Length: 146
Picture 1 (cartoon, rainbow, N blue to C red):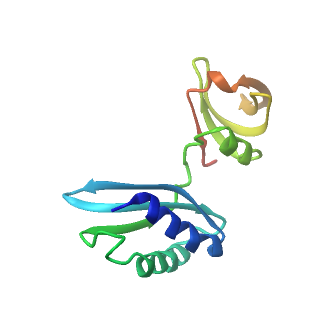
Picture 2: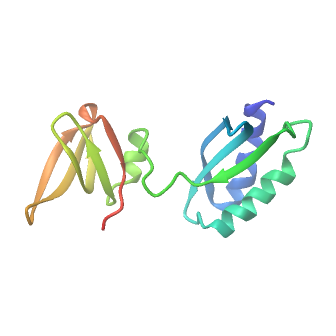
């Protein structure tokens, strides 16, 4: 099974669905072989992903896709990691969780320029802006505000 060939097929399908490919990999769970397709975009409802799953399944013929694998199509999740600077830039204005050596907090990602994150936290009822060098960030992910 050639993942590069499968990736091209999937990308051709999802471009018409206003989606992008977040991740494509094979994995084993409970003894089953799975092709995991994680998609990102505006409409990640289960109905839409179900339709896209059908389109991908129809396009992956036995000469391209090993029939012993299950196809799993899903979203990256509400608290997905921001994997690179481009994803951080796209998350400006969103509520995120940032972890550095000195900080482990939720707040708003206000800006990202010249390798510096502008982050706003609520500290005992007061809003405080922090400037954080991107190189010091251990992890950053989207967060859910309660």
